Amino acid sequence: MKKQKKSSAWMALPLYIFTIVFVICPLLYVVALSFATPNRGYGVTWKFTLDNYKNILEPVYLNTFVESLKLALTSTAAIVLIGYPFGYFMAKLPEHRKKKAHLLLTLPFWVNSLIRLYGWIIILQKKGLLNFVLMKLGLIKKPLAILYSYPAIVVGMIYVLLPFMIMSVYSSAEKLDWSYVEAARDLGASRGQAFFTVTLKLTLPGLLSGVILTFVPSMGLFFIADILGGNKIVLVGSLIQDQMTRGSNWPFAAALAVVMMVLTTVMIMIYRKVSNARELEGIG
Image (cartoon, rainbow, N blue to C red; front, side):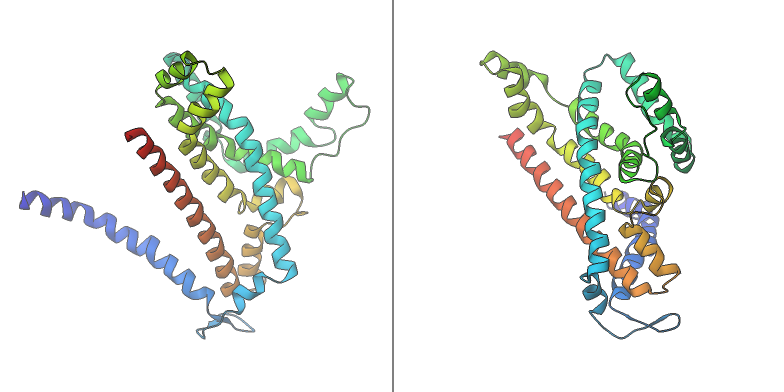
């Protein structure tokens, strides 16, 4: 037994080294950098200050953070409304159709996301496919100016992040014991009541997992806002990039990154708490 434990420890050693060198150390460096003082020219002075976090509360930067939060909430809400039913009904498909659905869902990942987003430019521009179809159907008389607008960014966010929500809900719904739903129906519950009291509660961990995988990235995917929004909306990710390149204010960029990491950690803690509560209910 001791030999097996030693051998397993040695086998896990590269993983520990990798985690420490490429995960823990960079995170600690970012946190330490967020409390440093930026030089007027280039570089930083390792003098402790809270000004980097105070600057986030300035109207200009706070507005950027608020706009990113609004966009993330809007995108996530739309993704939940589209992705949850998709993942739910996908889990109820026959086995051979599940494989086809998996293939169609993962197919876009075979193409670079930037190329796919440029494809949306062709669709959303005034002389694009969407306006052509809408005008042919007689729904509009003039082309809609969708490209380089807020809705275009939301569409891009949904397109890029929707598969993560679908797969999260699917993995949770596939493990669902449908006998609980049937039991609720036998006891007189309607389809809606059975869904909200049984199905939704049991698939809630998958839903929250999808929210984490969509909400957090949507605050930092600045390339979507750049390509489809025409730089009209500045996200936190864009602000971090700007501070690291043009502004050369790495401590402030690190402070923004730390705030986003804290937000991510809080959401993961909520997800784990809800998941543990569901497991305890299942055990009980």
